[in-house]
Amino acid sequence: MKTLWLVRHAKSSWQLNMLPDNERPLNDRGYRDAHEMPARVLTGFAKPTCMLVSPAVRTYTTALIFARHLRFPSDQFTLAPQLYESGVNEYLAVLRNTASTHNHVMLFGHNPVITELANTLCRAGIENVPTCGIVCIEHSHAHWAELGKAPARLLSFDFPKKNGEEISHRDA
Image (spheres, rainbow, N blue to C red):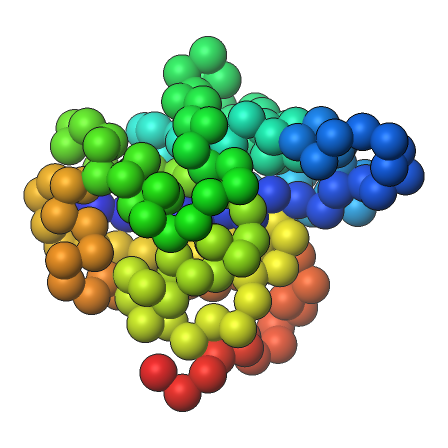
C-alpha cells in the first residue's frame, strides 16, 4: 500500500505584481494556513518519506513549512520542475518515477492539476482543491510506477476553511 498526499500550495500574494509568477511569495493567510494544515493532515497517518516539490516560491515555501512541522529534512526535498506549469501527465510521470521504497509521498503542486489528478486517480468528484488543501489517496500497488493503472481510494480531503462543512463532491 502507498499513501499519497496531494498538497496545493498555500495562498500567494499578488501585491508584488511585477514579480514573475514562479516568484510570487505566500501572503499572511498563506503562512497561517501552511502552519495549521500539517497537524490536520497527518492525524491517523504515517509521516511522508518523500516530498516532491514544485520549484515555484509559493510551493517551495509551503513545503518548507510543512517539513518543519513534520520534522522532515528539507535537504531531502525532490525539486521537480515538471510540477510547474504542466498537467496531469507530467505529475503522473514524476510520481511514477518515485522509488518504491517510499510508501508515503507528499507532492506539493498547483491547481488545476492537483484537483484533476485527485479526480483522475480516485474518481473523487472534487470540484476544486482550495489553496493549502490536501487530498490523501491510497493505492494498493507495491510500486509507484503502477499509479493510475487501477482506481485509488480517497482517504481524506481537507482544506483550511473546511470547518466541519461537507466536502464539495460531484456525483462520481
